[in-house]
Image (cartoon, rainbow, N blue to C red):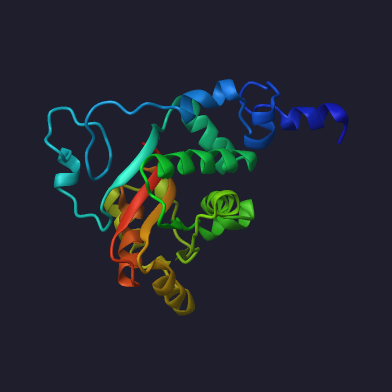
Length: 235
């Protein structure tokens, strides 16, 4: 690797600008600021987190659904820069962005006084895990653990199956029915770690809520009293 490529690898993955922030997080301060200091406006559904138009408390979709989680908090709409950043991390192997995503989560937890949490990374499909070589949500949890001491437990696993992004809401539910699981030794670990903790499932994108609900259901079956969700974007 020559010096020019080394410098480029340290620069912002969006604009190429090189500063100390981009060297660590993959984004320069200018590109990161709109995502890091995103302001939430208006009333949101207390289940999925989507903005409410004329509904009272819960959106029309969530009124007709039964989810195993309590509430989902997301940071961005899955479009524009947010979609690009998540894509660079999830599909292009740009691991520096994992540290940036960890910073976003930490700021949210601190701002909301959530200091007694147990993070659970959503599981990767076996195909994606083999291709990437790591679970991208687990990597975010590791960054939070290493920098801020926030505990996590990688207990959820997923068997081989169809790609969820191509499936409808009902197809996702059916597909996930027997594909998610927790190994017995991990179930024992989870019961011990979850006692007295605010359990939060961490995932990248909230689409129909089927994956989050299926994961939360299994976590509750294995000792978690309640489960909330944090996703970086909603589609």
